[in-house]
Length: 454
Image (cartoon, rainbow, N blue to C red; front, top):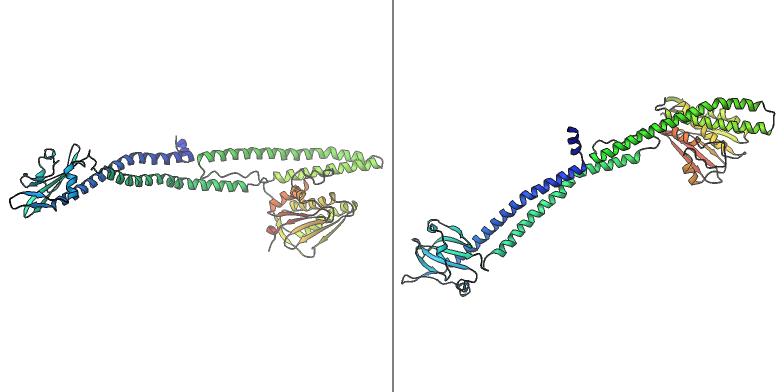
């Protein structure tokens, strides 16, 4: 149960529905109450103000004659309103004891409350009639003025009430509706920001690191389930890659023994083109198997032992081992930058494998007569350049892919050499840069600045 509650609490959909539901619930509860409150207050205020204005107008025009008569001498236009009864307005002037002193033609004292004379000021309503009773003093005599309005007549303030109500209602409505997007933004913004961060993490996942996984922390439940599924998929892919690497290593290992036997049988053949051709093919097969074995070993190891070593000495040792095979193929090889020590921290075996593959790549993919130059870089690194045919820009971008070769007609390699170098560069935090133009040779530079010791 707790797990379901926790999952619902982190669900993007649940949060949206929760926010929308709370906002709608508040609106449903608040809007009727607010509308009723505002409407009643507006009606009471406008009615009271209108009746008070009428009462003040009547009071200012009350006249007491010498013969004892009381009269209201309103202006002609005002008197016409009270005389016609069209607007439903009426007034009356009463004495303190309740006697009627003066009144308009349509005054209706029968609808007044019985205790009207007891209060200082009183608003009353009887059926469709609303009224206001206020005490005044006229010519030294206390009087009371009562004004009424029939709400069914055109003079009622319904239109004014509606306009006032709608203005207040609109403010309430806008305020509550604005809460919904603001609440959504406040709730969803952190989740969307975490999703964008997860997207950036996805772009940084390297295909050369199959053990990398997404971090589902902070993601909504829906996205978290997707991330979990992707991580499970990555785990299965990693297991498949490990099996593939182990299989490649086992195959390479198992084929070495029959290949060695086949080489011995070929060496017993009579000298000639058939014997040389067989030995050459066997050598090519051995080269491919060595690359498969090296790649499987490299990928299978999770960590690699690093040590302090002299890059210059290591490079010279590798070149010395490869010089006979380079020269036997009709190519030349030279080393430059060997006059100084370059101390780095790296894995000796992997680095020797990388330099070997760079030189072997130049040897295998250039014609006889090509000059290969190995340069030891002062900034930490090794560059292998040749003056061979070179490769195009498109080919250079694909050279580090496994089992891809720029020259598909050649059969002396499986397209693994540069892939191995790239993987070794990744292990050392180094860079493999390929610069080449067709007809102007190629330059393969392994930069090891991060491994350089001060």
